[in-house]
Length: 192
Image (cartoon, rainbow, N blue to C red; front, side, top):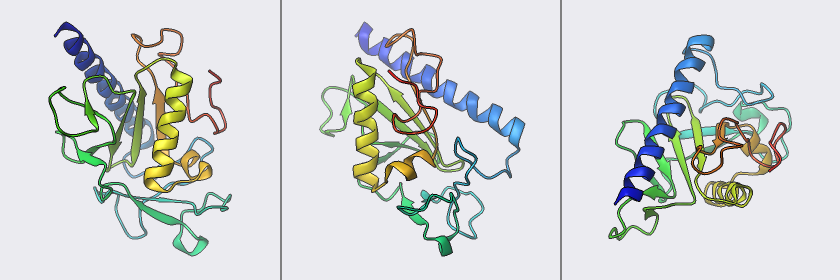
């Protein structure tokens, strides 16, 4: 019981850190600023949308290295919310992708007391918060990357263009707990 409480508290801390990061981003960039990837290429929702909770993310089409987000350049909308492995989070506009913390008695195969990773998607900002919760974190990061690519049909280039953070809590790995690890194949990724 104590382990479940510790896990729940750790996940709550990760979510709070993610929310804090969003507040800081909004303070410095303003709520009207478009989301950008690490290399400042736009990552936007479908044309004409105001950034509301549609659940759709537009990413550059495969082979598009321009970073352009317009439909004319071959961008592809990805409907994160419509995927059957996407679940609703208690906060409106927040979704978990794949694994989520649940009770051992749950019949949901993706609900487990100790998942290897958690992916939280915030539709308003199109932000993906990926938390690595098991060692070795290098393997867990690859597992999370492969999950996103296979479930949502994303390429490595498209993954790098997302608005995201890959992190691990202190109780999993002290050395990397305060670092945005990035996806392993993206520029600026931390070598684990």
